[in-house]
Structure formats: structure tokens, C-alpha cells
Length: 132
Image (cartoon, rainbow, N blue to C red; front, side):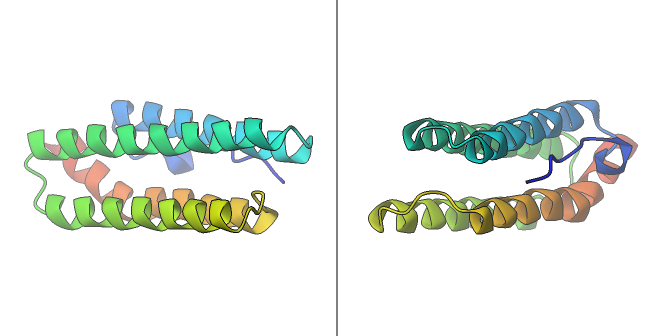
């Protein structure tokens, strides 16, 4: 697994959000490293739960910033956040029910989810917030 690198291409031009995204990238990379190093399954699970908790907190933080800036697409963005969290929780639930460890495909899905959200709707929201 290759590390995600936080650089200016991931910047949404809002320092508070960029700092959250840096933490999410670091958490994602810790999870990937643990898998590569065949760390115990329980440890990998803890790292995944930490990533999910950080993501949930970040989404609430981001939504607050959008609300304060009067972001007109807040409800749509909030809905996207909820759909993303629901999808990841469902993946996690199915994995646990099947007693299946986290896979490289799961990590790839998480990477696409994280970067896709930042490059998509977060860039739009960041532009609005930084202008208001």
C-alpha cells in the first residue's frame, strides 16, 4: 500500500479543514501500515474505529464551519457525509459478521472515499467558506 500524501493539491484553502484532513490522512496511513506489517487483527480494528471516529468528528466540524459561513449547499453536503459514514459502517458491519479481516480492497475503497470527498464537495465548500 502506498501512503497518501497530504499536499497543497488536497488543500481546500480553509486551515481548520486542511488540518482535519491532514489528521485523517495520517490515520488512514497508520491503518495501511498496520495491515502491511501484519499487526494483530484487534489492533487493525482499533485503528479502523479510530479513523471512523475522526471522520465523524471532522464531518461535524466541517458542517459547523459551513453553517457559520452560510454555505448554501450545507444540507446536500451533510447528506453526502451521512451517506459516506453509512457506507463505511455497513462495510465494517458486513466484515465483522463474516469474520473477515480488513482487505487491500477495503483500504482502496477507503482511499477513494477519502480523496474523492476532498477533491469533490470539500473543494467547493472550502472555496465558499474562504470567500465568506
